[in-house]
Amino acid sequence: MSDTRGLGDLGRLPAEIRSVIWKYTTPGCSSFNKTEESASLQADDTRLAFLRTSQQVYWELSHVVYKNLVLYFQIVPMYQPEIWLVASTNTGLQLQLRDVGDATRQGFRKLPYEKLKGVHIDIQAPAQGNPGQVLCLWRKCLDLQRLLRGRTNKAAFSHLQIHFANSDTAKWCANMQPNRTIVLDELEGTDDYYVVLIALRMIRRVRTVTVSLPQDLKSTLDATSLDLVKGTENDLTEEYTPRSPSEPKDIGNDDDLQDEQYEFF
Image (cartoon, rainbow, N blue to C red; front, side, top):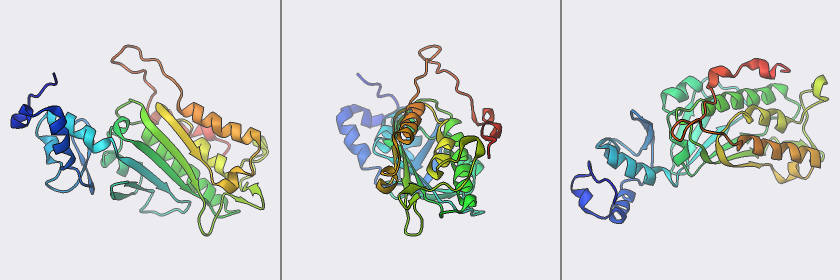
């Protein structure tokens, strides 16, 4: 029998009936509201105020709020002083984040990612032959993985999708070849998509990962390149061993990651 303390008269109802009631309190989300333990997606000044009434209500309602929620990070290759990236959800919420500090203040480190249906990172193609845009994407992705790696709750994501998107003005490949803008002597050149992808390889504790490439780009890649993409998926789902049932292994935080790891840029 579940604990019904803190539910008031609602505690007299079966859990199945309470679950139906909770669904009527979560029609959509429009702002982040930070609580002591995590960031909660809040619909307006009154909806989801239930989350603050008691620990038991929060526990039951948060599962309803998050289980069908998909969080999107949209990354574009242009430098914009006031916009680092755009975060949005499948419920209609959209936030423009200035930098990692702004995202932290808005509760993204405390968001219970393990309860979300999934996290999608959408990366727009840079202009062909523009190294500044490639490096801009790499820098933004590096900062994003630091944000996600430094999250307060170390529980595993349910699903992470990394999607490389073409646009009307830019694509990840041209003339049946992947774009290769930055020439690295040590690596004999690196495809643009992979320069960006390696910035996300340090994210850990993800149950399932999908790296999605445009069909025209995917058709140009040889077996070795496809193996590199598959290897990235394996890296992100790397298993970890808890030191005790209640204490996950420490994977460090964003301060542990130094730019020297990527000094070839």
